[in-house]
Image (cartoon, rainbow, N blue to C red; front, side, top):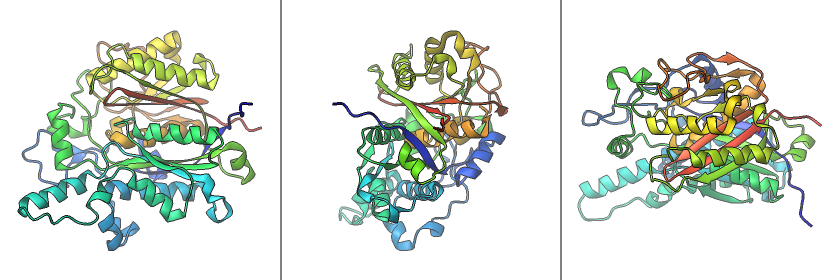
Length: 420
């Protein structure tokens, strides 16, 4: 006999982003249209085509970690631990009263410990042939190590692993966590993603792909999703975390419920390593699957937090796919791209953008797409991209789209909780 699937809700949020070092700061910055782009401070950029990014502001690891702990943790893992700590506090969960074997962690990153890898190899090359690597070199580099640290910090014995699908990584983590709870394999999951790729190799590598904006003299308006004059994305860093919980479990402990996950969709473009399918075939499949999974009507969707990276091919493919899925209903949806403010957090993008899709359900405000001056001529101008200013609106259904190099597509549908 097939088991009935469990309902899954979001009961905790945590973030550290280029426009706010916690969820409250992040949300205030989102609705006010704050821009996180600034000249890179981490290294000398004179030789680089792009000399700006969306770095974290006023992040001090000494506040969160001892010097000994910092030697074991790449910034990618640090950011994940910081965001997950906030989400756990925000959820109000008392782990001493829970079955820890029923609580797991799925954490994501697209690249992982890039700074550690870069610095360690540079030290080796510059230091001669004697291989003097730190004993923490390998652990700091691993993408799964953040999930391991989070579980060790709280003694969580449930499912524990990492997901990697480039810029869709943390959305895949959320989907996996959702499925485990649906199937009754866990009661609570700590999930999300982190990224710390604003390094010499990170910026240089994306420059080599011609993926980054080079608007060095006008960096504040460089991230321009859907705009006629966009020239690439702006690199960001940070982390986002969601606490997912089985609905009845959350109700029993009196948890604050932010949203319910109504449906999820995943697909592959099977097209190109970096470019999306020009007709948006994979995106269409992911969105349709999420909506059909939820059982709602297409006309019920109020808001889409688009992947919206500020690349010509990516923006056009996504908009084309959204039009194909929603037809005339597209004109009733408010679409935005919060990457216009945060930059692109790569493997952490899905997690921080899930938060930006969830909060409008309770706040009744949709953040803007800033730096939208002239709509791309190949994009329907009648579609609402929430240009430059937040809008007040009742939101019952919100979608978060995330896509990654390699053709990985994830769509998560959040809905306002129906209390029963």
